[in-house]
Image (cartoon, rainbow, N blue to C red; front, side, top):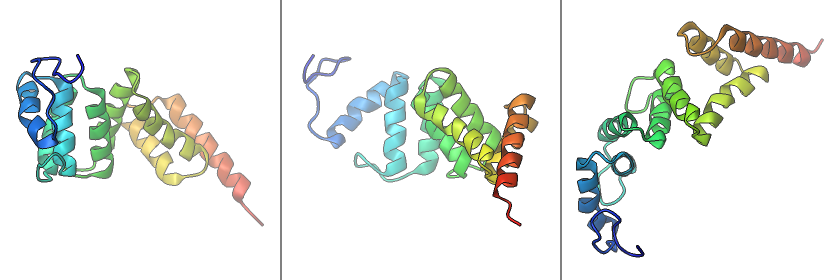
Length: 160
């Protein structure tokens, strides 16, 4: 297709500003990727848009409902950091788990970070896994494994 839009066959715009109206048409048509692209632009203030984190959260939420895995990943970060939304461990894990189950590599990485860090003695990660367990997002076996690794690491680092 070269330099034409795969949806409307018009020539591809030369600038981000010229692409915005075309992308808006795809958002109006409920295209998950276009919705996420708009959310990314609002979050960063790119493509000639002013930065608007609440609008980005709203668009990422729409894109996630439409099945965009990158939108789930971004929402996981926002809920993890409490950026633009109230910090919510259960929701960040929920978004990352959904994306990870469907093969999103970065979401798998983020979920594994807490597990690995807890086993290496990082108390914050252990507490996050505990919170996940308490809310039903982690198994008892996963929490017990993280706790054993955490305790082993603490014992190994003790010095008389």
